[in-house]
Amino acid sequence: MSQFGKFYNFCRDSTLPICNLFELTSSPRQDFTKSCELIGIISGNYHISNIGVIILDAFALVAVAYLLWRSERKQAAVGRREMQLFLVLYALLTIAEVFSIGGFLTKDVILKWFSAIHVAFIATTCWVLLLNAIVGYQLLDDGTFLSLGLFVASGFMIFLGTGYIALDTGFDYTGHFAPDRDFKNYGLYVLYLLFPLVCLVGYFVLESILVLRVLGETRPMLLLGGAALLFAVGQIFTFVISVHLCSASHGKIDGSLFETLFTLLAVITLWAFWSSITEDTWMDEPLNPSMSDAGYDTHRSGRFDSQYA
Image 1 (cartoon, rainbow, N blue to C red):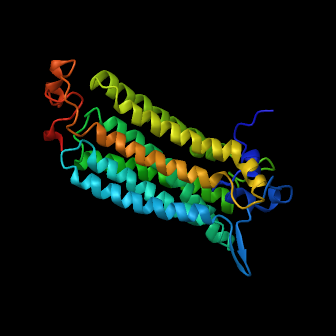
Image 2 (image 1 turned 45 degrees about the horizontal axis):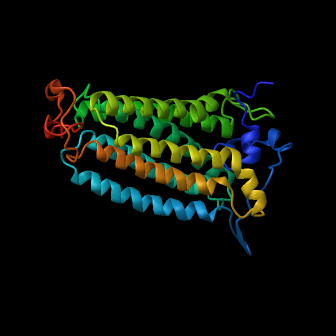
């Protein structure tokens, strides 16, 4: 039987924000039992089931603030504002994660709202990351009103569309997205799982072409590949290892802790990759002298001219 569109197995074995929209729906809830319940810390009436994620998210916000400050100092960097927008979205995603899977909210309505916001930020952040790769080709002048306007407008539409479907799923406004006993929801399956994956793969492919074919460099690929590997490891912890980790720790931790950690490391590595292709550090001559006509510094292979700041 095809598992496309079904979240039951994912929600049974993992801690995902989208599962809050399904678990609290009365009909599927009757037959739903998690493989391992995340317990975390319980002290009297005070209960936090995912304190590790909360602590890591706090570190993530500090890291994002530092990267935003470092980005602001890179006055000549191509896509500086666009990269800052990606970092801001990741910070907002991180804040939403604290409330959606932190495991301390007790009111279903509030939990559903934050979970829907979290899911919407995931789709939007991945979309903006893909647009960051396109900016590198200088089809539009980066940092301009037109460039940032396209980022904000398209991202806002994705956020609203994904958020609406998530909220309709959780609160059953129209009945159109109400999940069945398999937690089937084609809209969220595409927007939460497939669409972000397409955006991430697209970013990796476009940046690989930019680095290898346009800039004629190989060293930045180590950082790009490292970011992709770190993110992939985080997903493996979420979808494969989580249930085994939860069982081994008797419900103290699960894969969401390491997914948060490796995603943070991936974002930091990704920023380092972006920084590496916008710094005047490579001293090799470019393979194609005509690159100087396309906004590249002919004295530094693979580095954008400062006129595109």
